[in-house]
Length: 307
Image 1: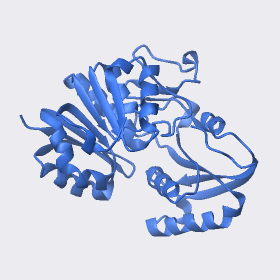
Image 2: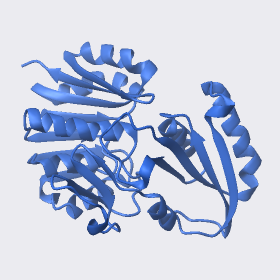
Image 3: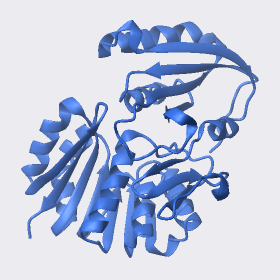
Image 4: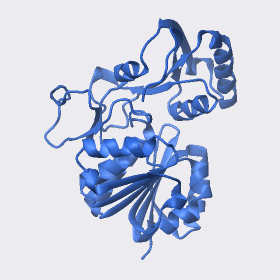
């Protein structure tokens, strides 16, 4: 999705404490600061591997109008103070740029990564350049995605969970609540799930997810629509809810009801200090926590439903 860029604009590169990129990106976009690109870099310039011990650097790139320089700097300082960051934890680097196409900048920042048996890449990356392993499964994202590259912590942990669950017990059906680009739903279909559906209230999501599914030749197994969790029906072997802590708590009864007896629920987008509250809310609906994982300040939780 292309975003309009002024003839001259300010490019801001923000280095953040580990685990804060999603929160800050969400706040900036909600406040209307403009286009935000989230990136996590890895040592060596190669595909991000499976080792969680490899320290990454969280980076956000924001495109601003020139006159917003001082106001933006002040806002970031306010966020740093409210989040308790020290001066050594973050930095801003600003430079003026001539008009530049958003999609071209998105392409220049998009780095393929390996996760959960998949190599997630964009359609402008040549497969021959990815140094694929014999057991890698390339998952192609359509260029210009309105939903980023799929590389943030919660999504990476969700991809690993899908691979683990498929290995432990293959599933036939999967519902992806808040599907975004469709990366998790498409990954499930590529693993072999026959009935995959997803919804998202964002008006751009269904078309983007459908394009992702078709590009990866699993379009016949996938169906996407615009809507919230309330628009879903039936019960599913697997429900993916890579959302936010507050939504998981608010919709705990709804999400639990979508899981069939013996099925599983993945909850993601959970800040560490809200994990216990999220677990309590979902367990009160008859689910049982089976695994809790974390990366930076982000937590994911896996649940099962008794038969």
